[in-house]
Image 1: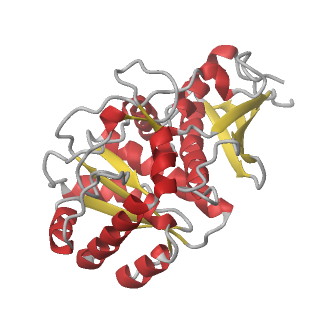
Image 2: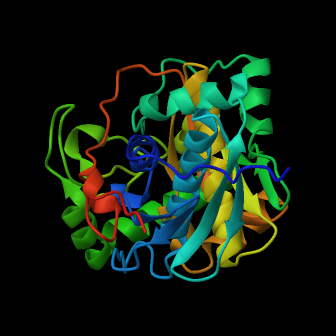
Length: 328
């Protein structure tokens, strides 16, 4: 007897996937993705019209963002009790998720799925720098996959020197500052709708807390900044290569790390903007003896203050065919 084909998704299930994808982190909260549902296949589309020419000139962070959305999409499918297969693509469709037959979600999958709605970008100081060793190990382990490596940086004096240099450059880059001002949404509250980074989510402190360098971001001397870095829990996410697939894999791994941290009552934020400066990544590899190409720096810890969620675009905008569910 021939086994029945996997059932297509209902509109309610498509809504579950859309809400999960919409809650993924993205560069400047630009949400550069869409979904196209074709029966039992779901395409994750890259919105190339979302451009950050000064911050992200080649679209690397945009693909990291799509990778994070892909992790959320896969977790949502599995949380619905369906198996799935993920295939990376090399065009505007960055990945296709093929949905299979019923399969009970594991406790780990369901825990990460539940963390999607609680994840926040915490651009403030942490309560303290002590994260239990077993928790730290679990956060790191979930991001280690083929071609993706997480490194606890050692030479914090060198990292401080490089981040201080990056802060000076970005503070004086008028084009970068104009673009950042455009994406710094002056929105407040927990029910804000749209894109961009809310003013409430930003910090006036120095890196690594600030995350985004604005014209008024302070620049402590290297010794002070190194001491601040030592008080953080930092991970440098590296990949073996630097192609589109590597950027997508890095974003997917980063989101697994972030959700694992969230599930363990931690918060985090990501630094990528210094990595776009000419020569910065090569210096980082050399000074920190990294095992690959650095794609992002992740900081995490226990929150000192609560962080509100970033605004989100209406779910209907996730579908290129309008709010009908993207069904074809």
